[in-house]
Image (cartoon, rainbow, N blue to C red; front, top):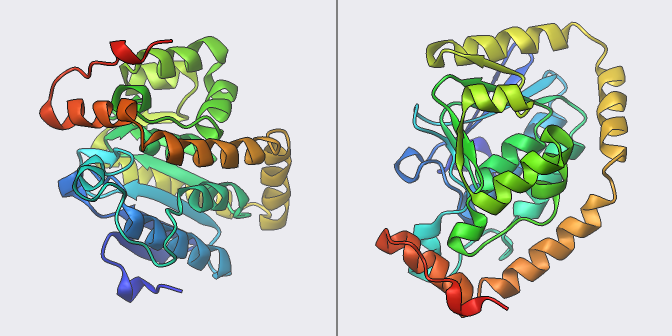
Amino acid sequence: MLRPEDFTDVRYESASGLAWITIDRPERLNSFRGRTLDELVAAFKLAWADRSVGVVALTGAGEKAFCAGGDQKQRAESGDYGPSETGLFELETLQRLIRDIPKPVIAAVNGVAVGGGHVLHVLCDLSIAAEHATFGQAGPRVGSFDAGFGTTLLARAVGEKRARELWLLCRRYDAETAYRWGLVNAVVPGDRLRAEVRSWADEILALSPTALGYVKHAFNADTGGVTALSSLSFDTLHLFEGTDEAREGLAGLLAKRAPDFGRYRT
């Protein structure tokens, strides 16, 4: 398994019961490629195995972005999201790890959280946002989608109508709107974000870790059936990304123009 000293895309650090996992690709708005996911999976496994860790925080480097989803520039350059340790794009593995780790996971949303990055924060048990953070979905705009956890858990968080709005319009929403909708638990000034996460983590660390693990699994049981739907979603997404329709979405993004999806309507 990859170790922190091998990481190039992620930083891992822990102190006083709190592990910080930071996506460290600010030049790409902390978007993820195959290598990034390998390192995130390894980092979450390290936090799971470390008995001194009771809470995990997920964030992005810098002040601009939490995570902008899959690296579309990489996708344009190579036709995929780049090489990985296993030859697989381990996004589904990462999503399940965030749910399955029996320790609370806090998303410290320090900027843009869109597309696959938005799904990651939704998967976390708690989300604390900086005041300048923005949220939204982008899949249908660039020829992609998440028809598993990214839709179902979102609807549980904000309700069916709001979740459909997020996916069907692909708008951006500010942190206060996200808080009002129940998409995040708290909003704080950007320079207070890490301290706020530390404070929440300290409250959690005073509680029974076994009880917290059972509670987390109980919440997950209600949406356990989505796991199979998520697998189906990723299988179909892989096929869809090879179509002309998906390529048009990517081409529009890279050319900074509106994609022409009209010819693909049925």
